Image: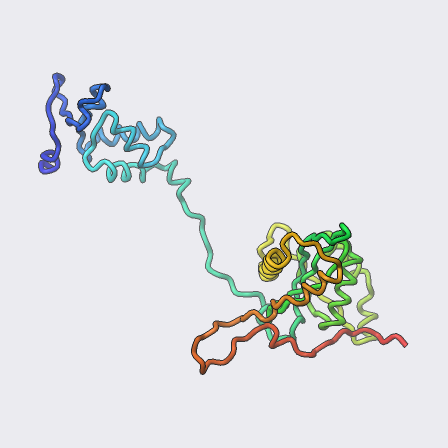
Length: 298
C-alpha cells in the first residue's frame, strides 16, 4: 500500500486531511477539485461513499461514477473498487441478469421424415406488387418443409377464393400436399374454414382424394414459420434487385418470377475439391411426381 501512495504528490491540509496535488493546480477552480482527498480502496468509508453516489445518481455506471467521485476524491484503484461495489447492487443486478435460454429443440417430425417433395408445405403471401395498370398483385409461396423447394403463384386479391385457386394451380403443377402449414392470415383461415365444411369421409370413400391436414401456427409464435419466412425474404431481395422501381404487366411479372433460380441454391457445403460431388439443390428433387387427384372432365 505504501508504494501506491508514493506515486502521488500528497500533502496534509489545515484539517489534517490527506490530499493529492493534481496536474491542473493552475486552473481557476474549487480547491476540492484541484486537490482531491486521497482515499484507500479497502476502507469502509470509501465503500459507503461509492454506494451513496451510486444511489443519488440513478445507479450510474462505472465510467460516470468514476468521473463524479474524482471531482472531490481520489480513490486508490478507483475503477476496480467502484466495479466491485457496483456488483453488489441488487437493483443493478436485476437489470443485468441474462434471460434463461434453453438448448436448441429438435425439428418437428414433418420436417425430417422421408416423404415426397411438396408433400409437406408451408404457405405465405408476399406483397403487394404494383402493375403497369395500377392494380396490385401478391405472391403466394409454397415451400417444401423437407427439401426446401419453392413454388410461387400470383394472386390478384387477398381473399380465400383467390388463394384456393392458387392452391389448385399448385396441385395441378406440382402435387397434392398432405400437410399444409400457414400463419393466421384472414385468407388462409377463410380457406381453412371452407375446406373444413366438406365431407371428407365421403370424398375419401368415393375417390382417392384424402383430406389435407391444415396446421395453423399460433398467432403469438411467428417464429414457428421461420422455415418459409426465410424464402419470403429471398424472394423480396431478388425482386428488389431485379425490378427496382420498374412496373411490369401481369404476364411480365409472372415470367420474371418463374425465371428466379431459387431452387438452384445449394443446400449443402460447396467444396473446392474437384473430387467432391455436386452440392444438393432443391431442383434435384423436383422430379415428375404429380399427384393432383383431380377428376378428368369428359
